[in-house]
Length: 231
Image (tube, rainbow, N blue to C red; front, side, top):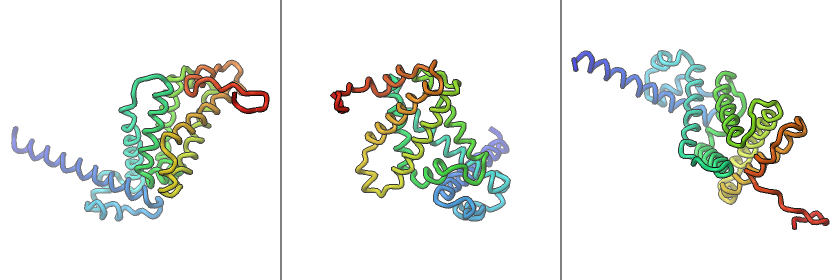
């Protein structure tokens, strides 16, 4: 290999490392601070990178914010790589468990970037909206439902909103309270929330049959005696 080629590769590797360091620093700072309170100088100084390089790679603050959001979405997607290929009930619970464990391990990031609303940039939020849409379509397919049917889409989005809010409430608890609520119990609660949302779909469209999906998730409902208690 020629010396110019070696130098070129070294420069490319150094540029990639600088870019990576800036993105990781941006993720950390935007996770713990509001968008308006993070300056490009803060990111560059914390990453120990010249300010001009941030503008070179990302143009402006919005540019690096978008990259931070994309990196976060990719990290969240990566936690699903070990989900077992199994029955719907096992796969859904495994996915929710991975989701909660990731967000609990990145609490500041979860509350500010992932679950904090549309934030400072609609395009940045769209990164997560795209991920949600893909997850909903995959879940619908797994449960034998047609994701594009309006009733299924509506209750699916409602289920996602319920999961988000339940997760926020769980993460806002102090550490002792969070630890007392086992992840498995929170996951089971979320599964039943999803099942409840699915059961509302036939109200909107009586031709949607959700019972096989509900049965796959939580099994048959327990019989109820005349006094209103489970038999």
